[in-house]
Image (cartoon, rainbow, N blue to C red):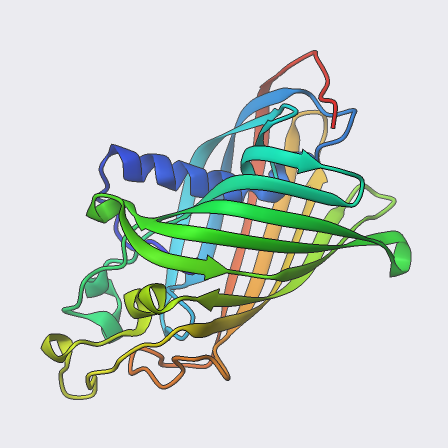
Length: 284
């Protein structure tokens, strides 16, 4: 879900959640699972990111992070560029997995629109995802549809359940002759009422001049266009970058006083270095 970090004051579990976000943010870093990929890899990555605090926010959060990454490509347990969790079913056309994702929290005092309100905590998302391979695409690429349904928990509030999200996504993937791997996708983010309130509701106690009380409702959170690319730079180094554009036009809570602009961008770039890898190869 859409959240960014402005100040890290996290307990141990939240730090683990942040590390999971590091794996996710560096998704293009780890080679896509193929029969030629090592069963496991361990390394470190460093990247910079400028991220919209949440869809509809008029403020950017900028971070530079260095994080470890782990890739493991077992038949059931998978931690790689596509997921961190359990793969339940895999056929040539379909894959069903149970994965986990994470996003940093936003300190409310650092976001003008939310000043004085409860901060957005570090969120962990857990749930099933269906990947549907749709076949060949123009330019030698491949089409895929991802259908993830996630329960969202706040690690800064004793893992309190914040609601449910659903983000159907159409993905185009390809690789160039000079080893650039890239993907482009379009998706919509949907949330139940509980999760929508977490981001967009303003209670009577939080209402001030210019920020009237508002009751959030379930539905569309944002529409998203995303792009990522990665290229190996030798045997152990890998360069990667990612960008996305979120729009709240037509969203269920576009009228919330916490929505200050209709579109916002996130961009990031980084490098990763593989320290160790297994001799044994993965069997996809």
